[in-house]
Image (tube, rainbow, N blue to C red):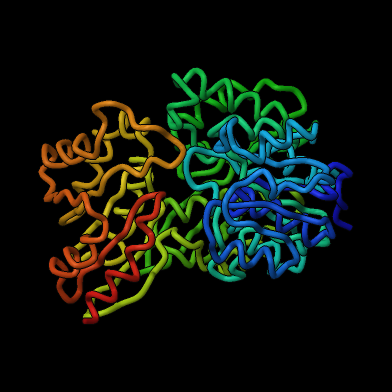
Length: 464
Protein backbone atom coordinates (compact mmCIF):
# COMPACT_ATOMS: atom_id res chain seq x y z
CA UNK A 1 0.00 0.00 0.00
CA UNK A 2 1.08 3.57 -0.65
CA UNK A 3 2.10 5.82 2.25
CA UNK A 4 -0.46 8.07 3.96
CA UNK A 5 -0.36 11.74 4.97
CA UNK A 6 2.48 13.06 7.15
CA UNK A 7 1.06 14.90 10.19
CA UNK A 8 2.56 18.22 9.11
CA UNK A 9 0.78 17.88 5.75
CA UNK A 10 -2.77 17.39 7.00
CA UNK A 11 -3.80 21.00 6.26
CA UNK A 12 -1.05 22.48 4.06
CA UNK A 13 -1.16 25.89 2.40
CA UNK A 14 0.80 26.20 -0.87
CA UNK A 15 2.11 29.60 -1.99
CA UNK A 16 2.29 29.34 -5.78
CA UNK A 17 0.11 26.25 -5.88
CA UNK A 18 -0.26 26.44 -9.68
CA UNK A 19 3.40 25.78 -10.38
CA UNK A 20 4.39 22.48 -11.98
CA UNK A 21 6.21 21.11 -8.94
CA UNK A 22 3.90 22.59 -6.31
CA UNK A 23 0.66 21.52 -7.96
CA UNK A 24 1.84 17.93 -8.24
CA UNK A 25 2.46 17.66 -4.51
CA UNK A 26 -0.87 19.36 -3.80
CA UNK A 27 -2.69 16.87 -6.07
CA UNK A 28 -1.15 13.88 -4.32
CA UNK A 29 -1.97 15.24 -0.87
CA UNK A 30 -5.53 16.04 -1.88
CA UNK A 31 -5.94 12.52 -3.28
CA UNK A 32 -4.66 11.10 0.02
CA UNK A 33 -7.29 13.05 1.94
CA UNK A 34 -5.43 16.15 3.12
CA UNK A 35 -7.27 19.47 3.38
CA UNK A 36 -5.21 21.40 0.82
CA UNK A 37 -5.36 25.15 0.25
CA UNK A 38 -3.16 27.62 -1.56
CA UNK A 39 -2.81 30.63 -3.79
CA UNK A 40 -1.43 31.49 -7.18
CA UNK A 41 -0.82 34.70 -9.08
CA UNK A 42 -3.34 33.95 -11.82
CA UNK A 43 -6.19 31.68 -12.81
CA UNK A 44 -5.20 28.57 -14.76
CA UNK A 45 -6.41 25.12 -15.81
CA UNK A 46 -4.19 23.74 -13.04
CA UNK A 47 -6.04 25.81 -10.45
CA UNK A 48 -9.33 24.48 -11.81
CA UNK A 49 -8.07 20.89 -11.69
CA UNK A 50 -7.01 21.32 -8.06
CA UNK A 51 -10.42 22.70 -7.12
CA UNK A 52 -12.06 19.74 -8.84
CA UNK A 53 -10.03 17.46 -6.54
CA UNK A 54 -11.28 19.39 -3.50
CA UNK A 55 -8.50 21.91 -2.88
CA UNK A 56 -9.16 25.56 -2.06
CA UNK A 57 -7.31 27.81 -4.50
CA UNK A 58 -7.17 31.60 -4.13
CA UNK A 59 -6.06 33.88 -6.96
CA UNK A 60 -3.61 36.54 -5.91
CA UNK A 61 -1.49 36.63 -2.78
CA UNK A 62 -2.88 38.09 0.45
CA UNK A 63 -2.32 37.42 4.14
CA UNK A 64 -6.01 36.62 4.58
CA UNK A 65 -5.73 33.60 2.29
CA UNK A 66 -3.75 31.72 4.94
CA UNK A 67 -6.02 29.91 7.39
CA UNK A 68 -5.04 30.11 11.06
CA UNK A 69 -5.26 26.31 11.43
CA UNK A 70 -2.88 25.49 8.56
CA UNK A 71 -0.38 22.84 9.65
CA UNK A 72 2.35 24.17 7.36
CA UNK A 73 3.06 26.56 4.51
CA UNK A 74 4.74 25.02 1.46
CA UNK A 75 7.00 27.22 -0.67
CA UNK A 76 9.37 26.86 -3.58
CA UNK A 77 12.65 28.71 -4.05
CA UNK A 78 10.78 31.19 -6.27
CA UNK A 79 8.73 32.60 -3.35
CA UNK A 80 10.20 35.84 -2.03
CA UNK A 81 10.54 36.67 1.66
CA UNK A 82 8.08 39.58 1.44
CA UNK A 83 5.20 37.46 0.13
CA UNK A 84 2.26 38.46 2.38
CA UNK A 85 1.23 34.87 3.04
CA UNK A 86 4.77 33.91 4.01
CA UNK A 87 4.99 36.93 6.30
CA UNK A 88 1.66 35.94 7.87
CA UNK A 89 2.95 32.41 8.43
CA UNK A 90 5.77 33.88 10.50
CA UNK A 91 3.32 35.92 12.55
CA UNK A 92 1.24 32.80 13.25
CA UNK A 93 4.32 30.61 13.87
CA UNK A 94 3.14 28.19 11.19
CA UNK A 95 6.04 25.98 10.00
CA UNK A 96 7.37 26.78 6.51
CA UNK A 97 8.28 23.72 4.44
CA UNK A 98 10.22 23.77 1.18
CA UNK A 99 8.60 21.98 -1.74
CA UNK A 100 11.38 19.39 -1.81
CA UNK A 101 10.88 18.51 1.86
CA UNK A 102 7.16 18.10 1.24
CA UNK A 103 7.84 15.77 -1.67
CA UNK A 104 10.41 13.82 0.33
CA UNK A 105 7.84 13.25 3.08
CA UNK A 106 5.38 11.85 0.54
CA UNK A 107 7.96 9.29 -0.61
CA UNK A 108 8.56 7.87 2.86
CA UNK A 109 7.67 4.19 2.96
CA UNK A 110 7.71 3.90 -0.84
CA UNK A 111 10.32 2.60 -3.29
CA UNK A 112 11.43 5.92 -4.84
CA UNK A 113 12.98 6.45 -8.26
CA UNK A 114 14.45 9.96 -8.49
CA UNK A 115 15.23 11.28 -11.98
CA UNK A 116 17.94 13.95 -12.15
CA UNK A 117 20.03 15.69 -14.79
CA UNK A 118 20.38 19.06 -16.46
CA UNK A 119 18.05 17.99 -19.29
CA UNK A 120 15.43 15.32 -19.88
CA UNK A 121 14.11 14.88 -16.34
CA UNK A 122 10.46 15.49 -17.14
CA UNK A 123 10.47 13.20 -20.18
CA UNK A 124 12.23 10.32 -18.42
CA UNK A 125 10.05 10.59 -15.29
CA UNK A 126 6.99 10.58 -17.53
CA UNK A 127 8.18 7.55 -19.47
CA UNK A 128 8.55 5.64 -16.22
CA UNK A 129 5.16 6.76 -14.94
CA UNK A 130 3.42 5.65 -18.13
CA UNK A 131 5.27 2.33 -18.36
CA UNK A 132 4.71 1.39 -14.71
CA UNK A 133 1.04 2.32 -14.98
CA UNK A 134 0.73 0.28 -18.16
CA UNK A 135 2.15 -2.70 -16.24
CA UNK A 136 -0.59 -2.28 -13.57
CA UNK A 137 1.96 -1.39 -10.88
CA UNK A 138 -0.11 1.71 -9.97
CA UNK A 139 2.83 4.03 -9.13
CA UNK A 140 2.67 7.41 -7.51
CA UNK A 141 4.49 10.07 -9.49
CA UNK A 142 5.37 13.76 -9.43
CA UNK A 143 6.51 15.31 -12.72
CA UNK A 144 7.46 18.80 -13.87
CA UNK A 145 5.03 18.70 -16.82
CA UNK A 146 1.67 17.25 -17.86
CA UNK A 147 1.61 13.87 -19.60
CA UNK A 148 0.03 13.89 -23.04
CA UNK A 149 -1.89 10.72 -22.12
CA UNK A 150 -3.24 10.94 -18.56
CA UNK A 151 -3.06 14.75 -18.72
CA UNK A 152 -1.67 15.32 -15.26
CA UNK A 153 1.68 15.97 -13.63
CA UNK A 154 1.09 13.88 -10.50
CA UNK A 155 -0.90 10.92 -9.27
CA UNK A 156 -1.34 9.12 -5.97
CA UNK A 157 -1.09 5.40 -6.65
CA UNK A 158 -1.64 2.42 -4.39
CA UNK A 159 1.53 0.68 -5.59
CA UNK A 160 4.87 0.73 -3.78
CA UNK A 161 6.85 2.66 -6.42
CA UNK A 162 7.08 6.47 -6.37
CA UNK A 163 8.67 8.17 -9.40
CA UNK A 164 9.80 11.76 -8.88
CA UNK A 165 11.53 14.40 -10.95
CA UNK A 166 14.54 15.54 -8.90
CA UNK A 167 15.40 19.20 -9.43
CA UNK A 168 19.03 20.24 -9.15
CA UNK A 169 18.40 23.94 -9.81
CA UNK A 170 18.26 24.90 -6.12
CA UNK A 171 19.94 21.75 -4.74
CA UNK A 172 16.55 20.51 -3.53
CA UNK A 173 17.17 17.05 -5.02
CA UNK A 174 19.56 16.46 -2.15
CA UNK A 175 16.52 15.94 0.13
CA UNK A 176 15.51 12.60 -1.39
CA UNK A 177 16.57 9.06 -0.43
CA UNK A 178 15.91 7.07 -3.62
CA UNK A 179 16.24 3.35 -4.10
CA UNK A 180 17.11 4.08 -7.72
CA UNK A 181 18.49 7.39 -8.98
CA UNK A 182 18.87 8.32 -12.64
CA UNK A 183 21.41 10.92 -13.74
CA UNK A 184 20.89 11.73 -17.42
CA UNK A 185 23.57 14.38 -17.82
CA UNK A 186 25.55 16.92 -15.81
CA UNK A 187 26.09 20.41 -17.24
CA UNK A 188 26.45 23.93 -15.90
CA UNK A 189 23.08 25.70 -15.69
CA UNK A 190 21.13 27.73 -13.11
CA UNK A 191 23.92 30.25 -12.89
CA UNK A 192 22.28 32.19 -10.06
CA UNK A 193 22.85 29.15 -7.82
CA UNK A 194 25.98 27.51 -9.25
CA UNK A 195 29.19 29.39 -9.98
CA UNK A 196 31.19 26.54 -11.50
CA UNK A 197 31.16 22.93 -12.66
CA UNK A 198 32.88 21.98 -9.42
CA UNK A 199 29.82 23.21 -7.52
CA UNK A 200 27.58 21.24 -9.89
CA UNK A 201 29.60 18.06 -9.34
CA UNK A 202 29.57 18.55 -5.57
CA UNK A 203 25.79 18.93 -5.66
CA UNK A 204 25.27 15.80 -7.75
CA UNK A 205 27.69 13.84 -5.56
CA UNK A 206 25.57 14.75 -2.54
CA UNK A 207 22.45 13.59 -4.41
CA UNK A 208 24.08 10.28 -5.32
CA UNK A 209 25.24 9.89 -1.72
CA UNK A 210 21.59 9.90 -0.63
CA UNK A 211 20.79 6.70 -2.54
CA UNK A 212 19.82 4.07 0.04
CA UNK A 213 22.30 1.27 0.85
CA UNK A 214 22.34 -1.37 -1.89
CA UNK A 215 20.49 1.07 -4.15
CA UNK A 216 21.31 1.75 -7.80
CA UNK A 217 22.62 4.72 -9.75
CA UNK A 218 21.61 4.63 -13.43
CA UNK A 219 23.82 7.08 -15.31
CA UNK A 220 24.77 8.01 -18.87
CA UNK A 221 27.93 6.46 -20.32
CA UNK A 222 27.98 9.02 -23.15
CA UNK A 223 27.70 12.51 -21.69
CA UNK A 224 30.99 13.96 -20.45
CA UNK A 225 29.64 15.39 -17.21
CA UNK A 226 27.90 12.14 -16.31
CA UNK A 227 31.08 10.16 -17.06
CA UNK A 228 33.05 12.42 -14.73
CA UNK A 229 30.41 12.05 -12.00
CA UNK A 230 30.59 8.27 -12.40
CA UNK A 231 34.35 8.42 -11.87
CA UNK A 232 33.83 10.43 -8.69
CA UNK A 233 31.20 8.19 -7.09
CA UNK A 234 32.13 4.66 -8.23
CA UNK A 235 34.00 3.92 -5.00
CA UNK A 236 31.00 4.64 -2.76
CA UNK A 237 30.26 1.52 -0.78
CA UNK A 238 26.92 -0.27 -1.13
CA UNK A 239 26.17 1.53 -4.40
CA UNK A 240 25.48 -0.30 -7.63
CA UNK A 241 26.27 1.76 -10.74
CA UNK A 242 24.57 0.88 -14.02
CA UNK A 243 25.68 2.88 -17.07
CA UNK A 244 23.63 3.18 -20.25
CA UNK A 245 24.19 4.66 -23.69
CA UNK A 246 25.97 4.19 -27.00
CA UNK A 247 29.45 3.86 -25.49
CA UNK A 248 30.97 0.40 -25.94
CA UNK A 249 31.55 0.22 -22.17
CA UNK A 250 27.89 0.84 -21.23
CA UNK A 251 26.19 -1.79 -19.08
CA UNK A 252 22.98 -1.22 -21.03
CA UNK A 253 24.38 -0.60 -24.48
CA UNK A 254 22.41 1.08 -27.25
CA UNK A 255 23.28 -0.79 -30.42
CA UNK A 256 21.23 1.38 -32.77
CA UNK A 257 18.52 4.00 -32.95
CA UNK A 258 16.47 4.15 -36.13
CA UNK A 259 14.34 7.26 -36.48
CA UNK A 260 11.10 6.57 -38.33
CA UNK A 261 9.37 9.91 -38.81
CA UNK A 262 8.00 10.99 -35.43
CA UNK A 263 9.00 7.72 -33.70
CA UNK A 264 12.23 5.81 -33.05
CA UNK A 265 13.10 2.13 -32.91
CA UNK A 266 15.75 1.35 -30.32
CA UNK A 267 17.84 -1.80 -29.96
CA UNK A 268 19.78 -2.34 -26.74
CA UNK A 269 22.05 -5.07 -25.38
CA UNK A 270 21.06 -5.91 -21.80
CA UNK A 271 22.65 -8.78 -19.88
CA UNK A 272 23.98 -10.14 -23.15
CA UNK A 273 20.58 -10.19 -24.87
CA UNK A 274 19.22 -7.95 -27.63
CA UNK A 275 16.00 -6.07 -26.99
CA UNK A 276 14.20 -3.86 -29.52
CA UNK A 277 11.37 -1.47 -28.69
CA UNK A 278 9.61 1.61 -30.05
CA UNK A 279 9.73 5.14 -28.65
CA UNK A 280 6.71 7.12 -29.85
CA UNK A 281 8.43 10.53 -29.88
CA UNK A 282 11.15 11.77 -32.26
CA UNK A 283 14.80 12.37 -31.50
CA UNK A 284 17.88 10.49 -30.35
CA UNK A 285 17.83 12.20 -26.94
CA UNK A 286 14.30 10.93 -26.23
CA UNK A 287 15.35 7.43 -27.26
CA UNK A 288 18.22 7.58 -24.77
CA UNK A 289 15.84 8.84 -22.07
CA UNK A 290 13.74 5.71 -22.69
CA UNK A 291 16.82 3.51 -22.25
CA UNK A 292 17.54 5.22 -18.91
CA UNK A 293 13.95 4.50 -17.85
CA UNK A 294 14.35 0.88 -18.94
CA UNK A 295 17.53 0.47 -16.89
CA UNK A 296 15.91 2.01 -13.81
CA UNK A 297 12.89 -0.26 -14.00
CA UNK A 298 15.10 -3.33 -14.37
CA UNK A 299 17.04 -2.19 -11.28
CA UNK A 300 13.77 -2.45 -9.34
CA UNK A 301 13.29 -6.01 -10.55
CA UNK A 302 10.81 -5.43 -13.38
CA UNK A 303 11.34 -7.75 -16.38
CA UNK A 304 13.07 -5.89 -19.22
CA UNK A 305 10.83 -7.20 -22.01
CA UNK A 306 7.69 -6.09 -20.13
CA UNK A 307 9.14 -2.64 -19.56
CA UNK A 308 10.26 -2.28 -23.16
CA UNK A 309 6.76 -2.99 -24.43
CA UNK A 310 5.18 -0.63 -21.90
CA UNK A 311 7.57 2.21 -22.76
CA UNK A 312 6.11 2.17 -26.27
CA UNK A 313 2.84 3.47 -24.78
CA UNK A 314 4.44 6.78 -23.87
CA UNK A 315 3.13 9.49 -26.21
CA UNK A 316 4.85 12.58 -24.86
CA UNK A 317 4.65 15.43 -22.39
CA UNK A 318 3.07 18.79 -22.97
CA UNK A 319 5.62 21.29 -24.27
CA UNK A 320 8.14 18.57 -25.22
CA UNK A 321 7.88 18.66 -29.02
CA UNK A 322 4.10 18.75 -28.66
CA UNK A 323 2.13 19.16 -31.87
CA UNK A 324 -0.24 22.09 -31.31
CA UNK A 325 -1.99 21.80 -34.66
CA UNK A 326 -1.81 22.35 -38.40
CA UNK A 327 -3.19 25.13 -40.58
CA UNK A 328 -2.56 26.12 -44.21
CA UNK A 329 -0.19 23.16 -44.54
CA UNK A 330 1.99 24.39 -41.65
CA UNK A 331 2.51 22.34 -38.48
CA UNK A 332 3.05 24.22 -35.22
CA UNK A 333 5.01 22.40 -32.51
CA UNK A 334 5.85 23.52 -28.97
CA UNK A 335 9.21 22.95 -27.27
CA UNK A 336 10.21 23.69 -23.66
CA UNK A 337 13.90 23.82 -24.62
CA UNK A 338 15.70 26.79 -23.06
CA UNK A 339 19.31 25.61 -22.60
CA UNK A 340 21.56 25.39 -25.70
CA UNK A 341 21.93 21.61 -25.37
CA UNK A 342 18.16 21.16 -25.25
CA UNK A 343 17.64 23.58 -28.13
CA UNK A 344 20.14 21.75 -30.31
CA UNK A 345 18.64 18.34 -29.47
CA UNK A 346 15.08 19.41 -30.30
CA UNK A 347 16.09 21.20 -33.51
CA UNK A 348 18.07 18.16 -34.65
CA UNK A 349 15.14 15.91 -33.77
CA UNK A 350 12.80 17.98 -35.93
CA UNK A 351 15.33 17.98 -38.76
CA UNK A 352 15.48 14.21 -38.58
CA UNK A 353 11.70 13.82 -38.42
CA UNK A 354 11.00 16.06 -41.41
CA UNK A 355 14.21 16.56 -43.34
CA UNK A 356 12.48 18.14 -46.34
CA UNK A 357 10.57 20.76 -44.32
CA UNK A 358 11.64 24.33 -43.64
CA UNK A 359 12.07 24.88 -39.89
CA UNK A 360 10.99 28.24 -38.41
CA UNK A 361 11.65 28.92 -34.73
CA UNK A 362 10.05 31.40 -32.33
CA UNK A 363 12.49 31.55 -29.41
CA UNK A 364 11.96 33.25 -26.07
CA UNK A 365 15.08 33.33 -23.84
CA UNK A 366 14.44 32.32 -20.23
CA UNK A 367 16.19 34.14 -17.36
CA UNK A 368 18.69 36.99 -17.54
CA UNK A 369 21.40 34.96 -15.75
CA UNK A 370 21.10 32.07 -18.22
CA UNK A 371 21.23 34.46 -21.18
CA UNK A 372 24.27 36.19 -19.73
CA UNK A 373 26.17 32.91 -19.45
CA UNK A 374 24.83 30.96 -22.43
CA UNK A 375 23.45 33.54 -24.86
CA UNK A 376 26.18 32.94 -27.44
CA UNK A 377 25.51 29.19 -27.42
CA UNK A 378 21.75 29.82 -27.73
CA UNK A 379 22.37 31.91 -30.82
CA UNK A 380 24.58 29.23 -32.32
CA UNK A 381 21.85 26.64 -31.73
CA UNK A 382 19.37 28.79 -33.66
CA UNK A 383 21.60 28.47 -36.72
CA UNK A 384 20.09 24.98 -37.10
CA UNK A 385 16.78 26.60 -38.10
CA UNK A 386 16.01 28.07 -41.49
CA UNK A 387 14.76 31.26 -39.86
CA UNK A 388 14.08 32.42 -36.30
CA UNK A 389 12.14 35.08 -34.45
CA UNK A 390 13.68 36.00 -31.08
CA UNK A 391 11.62 37.63 -28.32
CA UNK A 392 12.71 39.60 -25.28
CA UNK A 393 13.96 37.67 -22.24
CA UNK A 394 11.30 36.07 -20.05
CA UNK A 395 12.41 37.10 -16.53
CA UNK A 396 10.51 34.49 -14.46
CA UNK A 397 11.84 34.93 -10.91
CA UNK A 398 14.74 37.24 -11.78
CA UNK A 399 15.30 40.97 -11.87
CA UNK A 400 16.94 42.41 -15.01
CA UNK A 401 20.73 42.41 -15.32
CA UNK A 402 22.05 45.68 -16.83
CA UNK A 403 23.17 45.21 -20.42
CA UNK A 404 21.77 41.69 -20.79
CA UNK A 405 19.11 41.46 -23.49
CA UNK A 406 18.12 39.07 -26.26
CA UNK A 407 20.43 41.07 -28.56
CA UNK A 408 23.25 38.90 -27.20
CA UNK A 409 21.55 35.84 -28.72
CA UNK A 410 20.61 37.57 -31.95
CA UNK A 411 24.17 38.78 -32.57
CA UNK A 412 25.58 35.31 -31.95
CA UNK A 413 22.99 33.72 -34.24
CA UNK A 414 23.74 36.12 -37.08
CA UNK A 415 27.48 35.57 -36.60
CA UNK A 416 26.78 31.85 -37.09
CA UNK A 417 24.97 32.60 -40.36
CA UNK A 418 21.42 32.37 -39.03
CA UNK A 419 18.43 34.29 -40.41
CA UNK A 420 17.09 35.99 -37.27
CA UNK A 421 14.43 38.65 -36.68
CA UNK A 422 13.99 40.45 -33.35
CA UNK A 423 10.38 41.06 -32.29
CA UNK A 424 9.99 42.96 -29.00
CA UNK A 425 6.19 43.03 -28.96
CA UNK A 426 4.97 39.47 -28.35
CA UNK A 427 1.52 40.36 -29.66
CA UNK A 428 2.99 40.95 -33.13
CA UNK A 429 4.66 37.54 -33.38
CA UNK A 430 1.70 35.47 -34.67
CA UNK A 431 1.11 37.74 -37.66
CA UNK A 432 4.85 37.95 -38.39
CA UNK A 433 5.32 34.18 -38.31
CA UNK A 434 2.18 33.52 -40.35
CA UNK A 435 3.59 35.86 -42.98
CA UNK A 436 6.87 33.93 -43.08
CA UNK A 437 5.44 30.41 -43.16
CA UNK A 438 4.67 28.47 -46.33
CA UNK A 439 2.85 25.14 -46.83
CA UNK A 440 5.05 22.28 -45.69
CA UNK A 441 6.92 24.35 -43.08
CA UNK A 442 7.34 23.45 -39.41
CA UNK A 443 7.00 26.24 -36.83
CA UNK A 444 8.58 25.58 -33.45
CA UNK A 445 7.71 27.79 -30.46
CA UNK A 446 10.62 27.33 -28.06
CA UNK A 447 11.36 28.39 -24.49
CA UNK A 448 10.36 27.85 -20.86
CA UNK A 449 8.26 31.01 -20.55
CA UNK A 450 4.90 32.06 -21.98
CA UNK A 451 6.01 31.63 -25.60
CA UNK A 452 3.85 28.49 -25.48
CA UNK A 453 0.77 30.75 -25.66
CA UNK A 454 1.73 31.80 -29.19
CA UNK A 455 1.16 28.43 -30.87
CA UNK A 456 -2.66 28.63 -31.03
CA UNK A 457 -2.45 32.30 -32.06
CA UNK A 458 -0.10 31.45 -34.94
CA UNK A 459 -2.51 28.73 -36.06
CA UNK A 460 -5.37 31.23 -35.97
CA UNK A 461 -3.45 33.65 -38.22
CA UNK A 462 -2.52 30.85 -40.59
CA UNK A 463 -6.19 29.85 -40.84
CA UNK A 464 -7.46 33.36 -41.57
